[in-house]
Length: 145
DNA sequence: GCCAACGTTGGC
DNA sequence: GCCAACGTTGGC
Image (cartoon, rainbow, N blue to C red; front, top):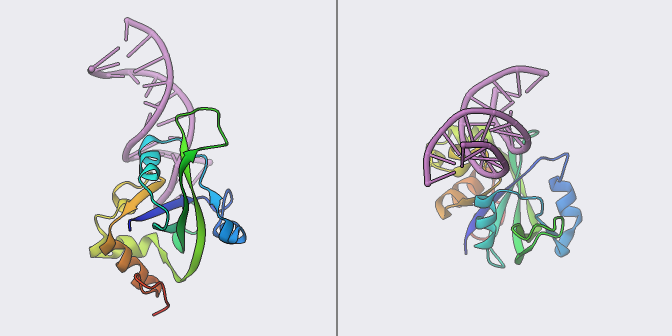
């Protein structure tokens, strides 16, 4: 299983809106960046990701799961752009702020720090476990600590 | 609201 | 295929 991070501006698409979609999930559309798209093309059903609020909040607020692999983005006729569907899995008991991530030596190589503007990022297993721990979750079972 | 970082576009 | 101009993102 691989791990990812999805960024969204809460006033465009918030964690609350994502959760309201429930099991059905929602396509992660609107991505117009090749690197981000390529990351999505690598995703498999069951991969997990962080849901991060940018601009407002600046924190990881929840855990999502990929529920449909890469397919054409229905919001554009441009065939270059694909996207996956994701569904909400659970809240982060304690949201993990960008500040906290930056302050953590173990996360100094995380894309969130090094590639700040990339909207869909890969996360290593070590980073996944560490961020979950900071947020009060067991990264393997996703049960509260 | 500002501005730095960085991705994309388009002329050559 | 290079690179300057431009647009967008996102932290502050």
